[in-house]
Length: 608
Image (tube, rainbow, N blue to C red; front, side):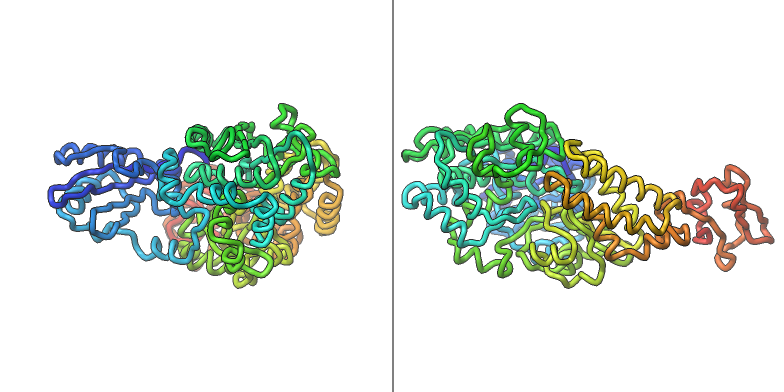
């Protein structure tokens, strides 16, 4: 989900109302892939063709672009807003649908019912609690005035005009906010630790180096509501006494970087950043550092070295960053989602915030919901929600009548939870007990056709390739583990490999220098814990239960389903299949090269 995410608004004065109608075309990554640019162009053309009085981007609140709207699976999404009527949403809009939508809905105020969003769309939003994402998909992230209309920078005004740094820290501590970047450290405790160190320079740093496969939570906030991040950082900087701030963003997020630059410029112009913010004695500048895309730079000390222009590699601790971080000065680092929660806490109060979630995991969490689920996209839910509620109530369940098998939570550093955990709550403690972790928030659903051995191999391969190579346990250990998994998926595994994998997982976890190396074995550990039978099937029976591992494929013909059509015989490139119109097909395993052509060509599912 990397790339540009924007929603443009076309405003057309229809012939039968005095106000301005608004067409909102979602051009998020999914929207663009689904043809959002073309849909937008045709709407623009049709408005001119119908001689409607169009004015792009000139509404009073100037909502010309928005960030990600969340439900990527239904792109292209289009909103039609006509004054004094309910906003209607169209899903999966194509260019051919545009003329009728303009004619019927915009001009005649008669929605095209057959194309309106169905129950899946409404259920997707009904079960969420969008706090951090409240402005995403609603305001124009390139216009600070729209953020101000929504109450933006009110929290900063409250802090600078009536709260001491210690009062701010106390309020954040009482809220129970924990870091949303993976570790789940108490934010107030971290701020308190950094504030107690007195130095001529201090830094507040935001980790926007989102590198997990399938993760796009922080990117969406930076693109859709960048001022929320800036406001949270300035409040955090004031609380710890920071003199400068940095946002570390991977270069693969060009739109996020562009909009952050715009937001910083606008915030300075209105004195929410820079010298003597809002007339107070507090000053703070925030700078953007573009990362080169190394996964290890998501680790705090490696990230700080990268900002300094050095190679991004972790260092031993202590000292902790709050004592000696960026340029060896006290540094407080949180991720994008954590900072974006801060203005909400200040505005609504710690008591209100702490009522959301569980006893030890407060507030909401943003997840990137992907994989074998109907409604993929970006969601925000209260801590403590169950896996079942996310997958089936919000996600709409597994498509094509397949059976739910597992969910991978936390990306390559997380773990797989099987069907028996569907009713388990999602919070820091529960996930840790189950053998997974919150991570940054990627949530991948897999169905019965997924091989869990191969899935753990995929994530370990990612961690191996992204290892910085500084410490031997991670540099060497993950490679050796990956070699074992490769052998198992190729039918060359041994039963003792399971014990070796378990031992090495623990050694890599305990001995690796940084959190990324320590968590690299998690997918292997969790699949061994919950799906050991699949490992044994690969090793003992030389079979992949899901037929995912090509090296273990064994093609046979089901006599009961074979119709003797000879289609498989005619398509086999090595003449490995015999049979006729009178005789059931037979596959010679000695000649078979496992090309899969017979399986693909058979119309009667007779090839197994």
